Image (cartoon, rainbow, N blue to C red; front, side):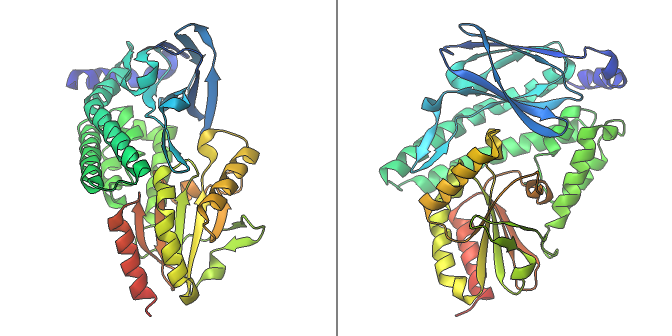
Amino acid sequence: MGKSIILFICFLPIFALAQNNFTVTLKLKGLEDHKVKVIYQVNGKSKADTLVKQSADLVIWKGSVDEPQLARIEVLDTSLNLRAGKAVMQAPILQFLLVNADIEIQADAKELYRAVIKSSDKEIKLFEELRTSHLPFDVESWNLQKEMNRKLNAGDTTGNYLLRQQSTALRQKNQALRIKFVDEHPNSYTSILLLNGMSLILSAEAMSEKYSKINDALKNTTTAQILNTKIENNKKTAIGKPAILFSQVGIDGNIVDVAALKGKVILIDFWGSWCVPCRLSHPALKELYAKYKSKGFEIIGISNEATSGQSIAIQNSKWEKAVKEDGINWLHILYNPAIRDLVKEFDINAYPTKFLIDQSGKFIMKFPGNSETQHKALADKLAVLLPE
């Protein structure tokens, strides 16, 4: 692995002279009539394309990228999704390194995330070593999720705590592998891409320390500059920092203004109608809202429906429907980067992610995900801030 890194450093300055487009050949067994969607970055913005089949199980995608990036491929087969109440959890997607090279992806269409990826590109080969090392954990994690989903739909909570603990342990093993990769490969473009998703598990200081060890030549890339901005934004939501102020039209047509709420305890909740853990957290939040609203507690839900790549009108419809279905009658705005990129400013990498702001207008809690432990911590903090 060390030799491949040295070779990559040698080739880095001549990216522009190498192949200037990509061809991704997908051989997907059992694709049938299902469509294939790819999600990637163009000029710093997420773009979703639906690919046309060449034949029964063959899809070819061609294009070009300015710099290497992590792209996603999905088979649009809703039978693979898990449903918990009114929320839907999508089956695991395939994330792979997209560069201007020839890439071959072979997989069962119903288990795309377990694909075999081949390419002569050295950086892709390096990333594939990491991705395949994750696969056993990914497979086990998805099996656990299916079991938890079955129990939720059956109203059976027996053993769910143990299943969640196992799922958390698997996630932590995956995280450890990624951190180890970054530490061992400071000259790899993949390390920059991986660091982009680590702000949930590393402090801003730790992110800065790892970024400082990245090869200086790589720091001149657009991706590295975005990462540096991300690190700085992550620092802005650190405990004790003043709240990020924003003002936007809410779901009822009235302005939601953080500054106007100063003096109250505010919970900012980044969620989405598509996000199962987000919607599972709503009943517990409703209890807290009913108990503490009259004492000066407010919630601002920021729903991100843009992950689907659909029009604002469709995003708005999904958002409003989920708010009504869940009966969450607090303040709401729809994430719209054209108005203001709050996901970027708050450095959101997982859903749900919540921030608690005290009466003085400072961040005092920040937590991703949904768990009983997190809910208890939030309830305990509210009891202190807003006593009987």
